[in-house]
Amino acid sequence: MLLLFILSILLLLIVAIGFYLSNIVIYPKTLSREETYHLEIEAARINKTLFENLYKEEITIKSPYGYSLHGLYFPTKEAKNTIILCHGITYTLFGCVKYMDLYLKRGFNILLYDHRNHGKSGGNTTTYGFYEKYDLKAWTDWIFQKHNHQCKIGIHGESMGAAIALQHAEIDARASFYVADCPYDTLFDILKYRLKKEYHLPSFPFLQIANFFYKLKTKSSFYDVSPRSALKKVVTPIFFIHGLEDSYIPSSMTVTMYNIKKGAKKLYLAPNAGHVKAYWHNRQEYNTLLGEFLKEIDF
Image (cartoon, rainbow, N blue to C red; front, side):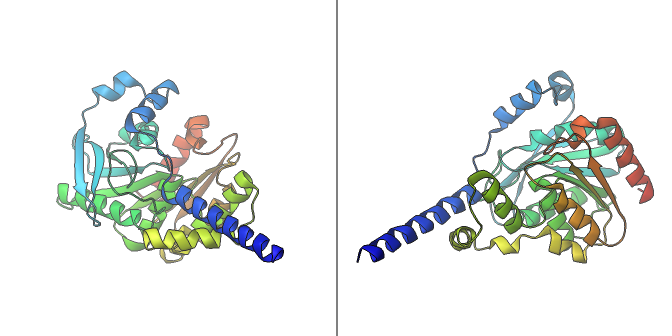
């Protein structure tokens, strides 16, 4: 009887941990627009005066799933190319302002936007690309419509934004190129890695239980989110980037995806760079290699 009681308590504890983990995944603690704006200014990744003097348009479109998506559009005079910049988890579009100069000086229009359940966009769950890739497709539709389909689009993402971009590449062949900076290769594998690193727990049975609750709340599965699998069908040129000192998402995930990708591709493993720091710690080399990549694909 005592053994049965202990086993019951243990089972309840395991289920409770799985439920808790599912909530962390589905409802990440996000930062507001204001918080991220000030953080980027304090870190000198946004020059407040220059940024505020740039002409910009506030854009709101409708997601295919009914909620609003909010973005900022920076038109460049007579530009025929547009870059979409995709931020990482818990952050907002301001996290990608640091990349703007790379494209402004190359004559691109720029679109920054907040993913679902982030910043000013709607949606009450985060699904790491399962639904977000279709939101990105909606932004791609908006750009092509705005320019009467007389334009070319590139997509540059960091962290979750990079993983979303790679999943988008599987469902929408209209982008001319992608830049994927420190993406995860599958949702299950990055959760397994983070679970061990942060909580010192094995993936089984906790992720399987967390996935059960995740399915109930999002109508999708951890196993449905796989940039790695998406790449098997993608021929669009991709520039893969990862900081060698990244302890949040291991650089080996990017190397794996680079090796899977067929066709035009480039790989940059940035020295002395942690998570989403490849550009900030290696700006000159990052810029040079991006230029080489665009030249290699005749863009």
